[in-house]
Amino acid sequence: MRELLRLIGNLLWLIFGGLAMALAWWLAGLLMVLTIIGIPWARSAFVIGRFTLWPFGYRVVERRELFGRDDFGSGLLGLLGNLIWFVLAGLWLAIGHLLSALACFITLIGIPFGLQHLKLAQLSLFPIGKTITPIDAL
Image (tube, rainbow, N blue to C red; front, top):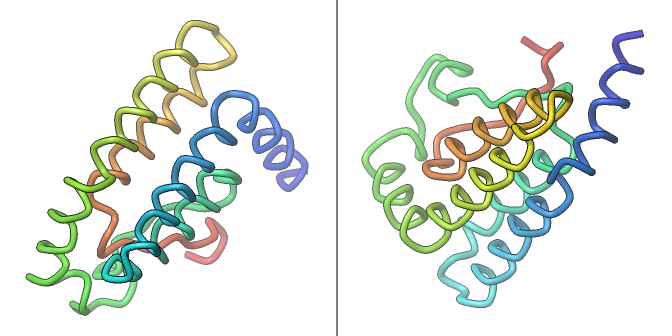
């Protein structure tokens, strides 16, 4: 039953801005790949784009909390990477998610989807140091 509800939620999500914002994430990833130097950010953009396309059943977790230790993305280099990401793509993706959230909040059925867009707007600002895991995995 839980799987059916996730499927329905994900299908409705596509209508409420999920598809458009996933395409925006993938476009950001493509632009990063074209710069060559942006390939590490591109990989993250493609992963988060997939999460943006089909979010129900998954969640975003700090890697530090998941693994119990710091790694490459959760230290000073991660902070620097997040600042670069913020300027190049993060701010623009966050604006897209905020506008999608506002559009979703117009209807009663769209409120949960608007809340998901707000979570994704927050993620789009500083994604480095985070990972996406199935909800049932933790």
